[in-house]
Amino acid sequence: MSHEKIRVLHVMDKLGVGGSSIHGVTRALSWWLPRMDRSEFEFSVCSLREPEDAARFFEDENITVQFLDRGKFDPRTAWDLLTVVQKAEPDILHLHGYGSTNFGRIAGALVGIPRIVHEHVVIEDQPAYQTLADAILSPLTTRALAVSPPVRDFMVERRKIDPQKLETFFFGIPLEDFTPSGDSVVKRKRRDLGLRPEQPVVCCVGRVDTQKGQRYLISAAEKVTEELPGAAFLIVGDGPELEQRKQQRKRLGLAETVLFTGHRDDVPDLLAMSDVMALPSLREGGPITLFEAMRVGKPVVGTPVGLMPDVIVDGRTGYLVPPKEVDPLASRLVELLQDPDRAEQMGRAAQEAVKDYDMSKAVERLTRIYREAA
Image (cartoon, rainbow, N blue to C red; front, side, top):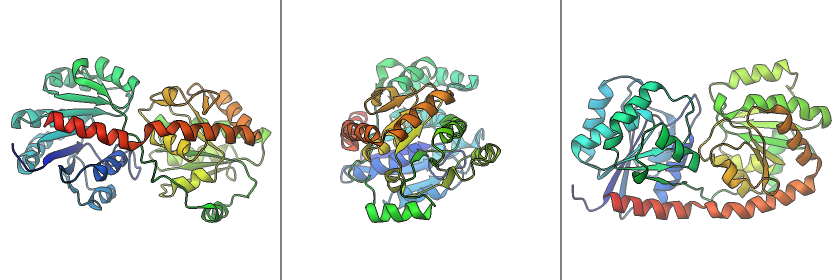
């Protein structure tokens, strides 16, 4: 195909996940695409599932979004996607998610355009049928991108990607955009949440789901409040386990300690009003909230999964604790909440370290990847 601009069609299984308003892949794309040279590139997005409100993140940037409105195993998806590809005439298919990489590689091969397989997370319990599909479709992969070294290993071992076609590519975050509203606004929002000025606060941002480990943070909250009765925990986000976690909070008698905010668009302000960020994930790729917390100058207590052990310098910018281990998590949180000077020092170190992950570098690399593929 020959166009004035390089046309890139991003194919995604869905724009949200597990009941959450937007997942990390959608968020990353909503950052990438507006920052790329629109005189050189033309973007569109196709979701295999039903229409979602998250489409607004693209529509606001005049990026076309289509929804196939098909179920997970609906064979009609193949024909529908092929039709979309034939009409859109993209120069590149950029594929995110199991369904998208399965159907997208087939459609792209039939039409004869490059297929980029992009993986954002390690799926420990990948279904056997997907491993089989990956083995069959691997030759149809033009290039592949992994968000972190552990994801790269996962793609080689489980997704059967040829290492020669694969590179590690972290999408970064727009550091210049991620700033709190200001002291007066943050203080007002803190009051609105019922938090006292001197109250120590732990914040956890992310989809409320098994993978994110909020159940262990709530259990840790019980132990933390035994030593620091005034501590509060903000759990920011929505997802499939929200009601279960609320029931857990009730069973532990933490109704006034653990606050669920639901999905929020003011994450910088919520982090700014907090003392520590907790990321007790069981698995990850490159969690965006890790970098957001560091940008705002907060120490992070995380787990050694995904990109976190490469980013968190244990004892300098935060702490790493074993997944599913409540006592170490609680201990590190208490340590930082009891020593605000230490927490502030680590937060400043985190703020300096996160500069290496600015999105501008990712945009430059992705631009080269698209030029090479096209």
